[in-house]
Amino acid sequence: MSALLGRFYLAHINDTHSHFDETALPLRLALPEGATDIRLHCGGFPRLASFIKRARQRAISEQMPLLLLDAGDSFQGTLYFSCFKGQANAALLNQLGLDAMVVGNHELDTGNTPLANFLRQIRFPLLAANWDLSGEAQDKPTRMQDHPLMVSWQNPAHPKPYIVKWVDDVPVAIFGLVLENMPDIAAPDGDSQFLPVVETAKTTIEQIHADGIEHIILLSHLGFPRDCQLAQEVEGISLIVGGHTHTLQGDFGALGLADEHPYGERFNRTLVLHAGYNSLMVGLAEVALLPDGQMRIEQGGNVLLTSETALLQSQQGEPLPAPQQRTIRRFLRNQRHVAMLQPDSAMERLLANNYRSKLRHYASDQVVSLPRGLRHVRIPDERGGSQVAPLVAEAMLFQAREMGVPVDVAIFNAGGARISLPPGPVSAAELAGRLLPFASTISHFDVRGGQLRLALEGAIVNALELGGSGSFPYPADLRYSYHASAPRGQRVRQLHVKDRSGRWQLFDEQRDYRLITTSYTAMGKEGYHALLNQRSEPELLGLIISDAFINYARSRGILTPPQDALYQLNFDQLVS
Image (cartoon, rainbow, N blue to C red; front, side, top):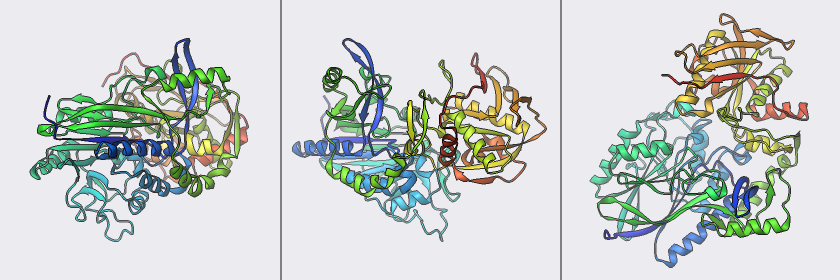
């Protein structure tokens, strides 16, 4: 056994996406009498606060420090962000008592300003060692470069790109890394520059070592595969706490959740920790400091947050019989990856009094009814594609034509929708807060047919081969086939466009089509770069995507999946 230099508790969250309230989580429980599908109400910040408070009390009783780290993507995801633009996030994270947070890509979905305002409200450091803000405009009213809590590249107000915490008189350095392709997947201001991840990591580690610190934590928003790769490419990182890919480590197979990655996987000398998504889970580990900068997990793991009295339902949303509920609750109590605890009253009061009360009218506004649930997946699988995303594309067409804009076709990128919809009545809160939580504006413009075809191919290649699953294109009044084994530039074929009388017509590559899509897609993000060759200046429709979908859903009254087959995919062989 190596000599211990110190021990501390590490609690970590990531990709909470403004999910401050509990979520009805579909689970498949491996009960002794057979697999059982349920919906269990889990997570939320009041339960998270209760868990952290209990962990702090335990740490105090054992005379050990506790670090609470957030690996980014706190923004977006629910009405709490849509309505309060980060103010609620700041207040609740302050209440939680974070020690540090790294910048996620969704923190920059609508430019730097919301994050800059967030920075002025938080009481903890915001880490991004490879974010160069030195070119930030001097006359900007919301500058971040000179803020002492902005731990970025060469910030005069915080000269070192890392912070230091102490564990039993041993210094532990913490630095953050953000996606270097941030401009491709978010919308940072043009005066921001993002530096290469590997080079920045090596430079920062050299500086930390030069300051006499051996134990280093990287707070990363790069995604699990990139974290594992970085751990093997860069020496000197003791532990990576990550986010971005919503990876849940640990064996949750008995609940029908992830069991692919053990908690705290080690790559060379570096441990990697991720803790799921949407405030459903939290990681807690007892970490030992070893000589030569190494760390070891003594005990711990990720846990799913719920309560003894949490609502239990069938997958269809119906109440379960009392005997079955007792059986399930007994089963959950015996799962070491489940924490049954009451919500924290102080966090609940803050949430209820300051924020939730202002959102009630959305929850009571029933927009549409679903005779059957609508499934959402980003990339089509053996069960088919998204039933939701094509309806969102239809909604953009509907809204534009209602407003007198003569659009021909619509494209909606799969990542813009976030959840499947269960059967039954659906409220405005569900549609605007959970299904389409990003405040994406809608643009329309003319694009030559050939460029539109290339944009479809670029988006599909990005989704299937480059890991950007959210770019997969779901169209309306447009259909296509994709042949993965064909050479690049020739994979999208058999395109047709539906005319105003409802008949499918051959697609003309030499003709201009008026396309309506999100402004994010219109910027050429995630494989859609061919759309930058526009034949007319993009014009804003004047609505965000959730408003358009709500208007469309109201007009329909009942939503059912599209009847037309809009795409055909050949996955036989992928070639570069």
